[in-house]
Image (cartoon, rainbow, N blue to C red; front, side, top):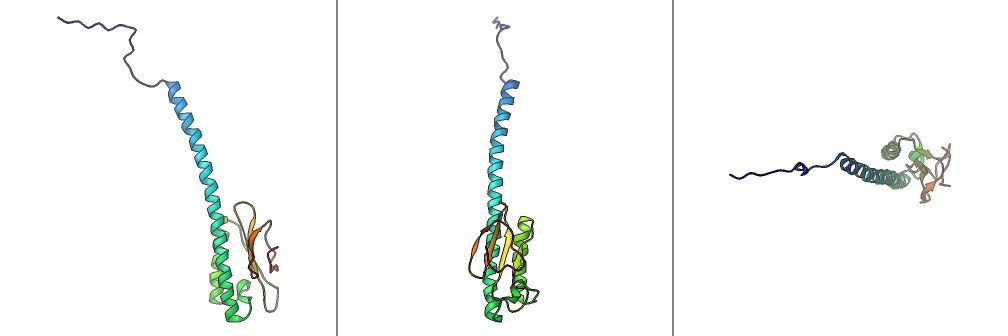
Length: 150
């Protein structure tokens, strides 16, 4: 007959202690917070790029309007030209992406020979494009009668 003796001091369970599990959970939490911070920063930069792209498309549409009409009245005015619908959509998309309204500036009366549009960015600045070809960040929104980016 064969008898096996097991001593009382021998630990037969193979598992993790509560402290080890808590340390692993804490490390995972720290790493995930770093990753989430990086993702949010990238998302804001993506939104800003969308605004810049939308307003860049406005410049091309505005030049089409100028070629057809000889002025920029339909860019910011209430003219019902087909091109103005596209510009309004671009400004609306840029504004809704950030959640704040954009501003389209043009002279109060007469034939518009210049225009400027700005829309807020996620970084707190505003992106401005104008008929002179300027495209840059500015500190605050344009006024409705501004025709150039400051």
